[in-house]
Amino acid sequence: MDSDSHLFLLTNTVVRGVERVTDADRGWKATLLGVGIVLAGSFL
Amino acid sequence: MTRRLVRLIPGLVVLTAVAVVSRVVGAETPLNPLVVAIGSGVALAATGVLPLWTRPGIDTHKLLLETGIVLLGARLSLDRLADSGLVVAGLVAVVVVAGVAFSELLGRFVGVERETRPLLTAGACICGVSAVVAVAGSIDSKEADISYAAATILLFDAVTLVVVPVLGSVVGLSDQSFGVWAGLIMFSTGPTAAAGFVVSETAGRWATVTKLVRNAFIGVFAVGYAFRYATKTGGGDTASVDVGELWTRFPKFLIGFCIVAVVVGTGAVGASTQATAVTASDWLFTLAFVGLGFDLDLDRLRSVGLRPLLVVGFHLVAVGLLAFGLVSVFL
Image (cartoon, rainbow over all chains, first blue to last red; front, side, top):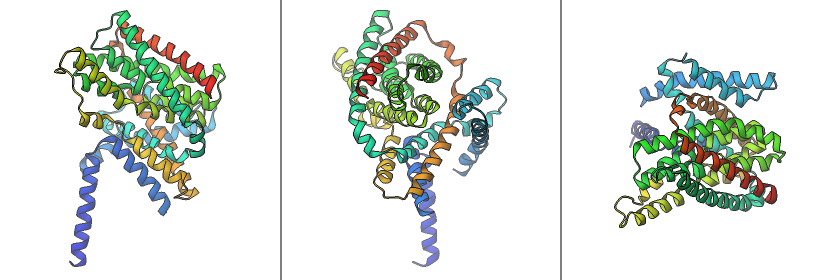
């Protein structure tokens, strides 16, 4: 698989992931957002 | 999906603008910024100056509150929780069981309909409107009963949001004890957290943690009621225990709260990450409380009847006194 295919696959996965999260239960969204903020804070 | 997210922007801008103003007012005057945030939300909703297209963004305030609670896990001292956690869990169990018994008996005595009683009891004893809906699902309640019970609980949310912090400054409890007391007696999670943080940071943390422990009772409560109604109606045709439905109603942000508490509490991330999480939590609470003010729709609350009002009012006084006694003795 070339780099373009990798990029397409990655983008597709991220878009599908975001779509699933926006349709998910509010409590899960809050969990993902909260844990995401902590993880982002530890990388910055 | 992009269009859905774009629709949220105007309301989020409104929440952010009011939150910034509230915090500036809180910093420059003796007024509490959270009280300013809630009051501004109530005032804006009452005047009706905001266009309808700001509503989707404003309606995200529950998500913002729950995310703030998840991040509140970063402020939790695991040592402190280990010291007082079991006592708090015990107090919650005692207050919930006593509250359920009192509310059911009083409801029967006053003549509240059999179908409405468990909904009022769930809302008052566990976690407000979401508990009303969870129990309604497990005992197959009518729409009218649900909205009646929900309106009663929302009315008391509005009243206790003002009265409980005032009482807290009068009764002379420590910040931790006040927080636990508020967490034991108030109904919905948002107003409980708000009432705690209005008094102090410590009170807010304990009010929220205690309320989260109470929220965790929702599954046990709904299953108990479903079994009880199935037995009473003979054969279980009108009530069922749907595990999937219970899981749907379970407050999942509790899981996020525990993850963040463990990740931060065990030192898996640094102090600067903890500070970032705490700052984010503060801002999310301010944004959420502006939205909470928008939801305190006084017109909608006029539909509440006298009997449910009596039951929930007396329940609040009785449970408030019991919880006050327990907190004074054990904390």
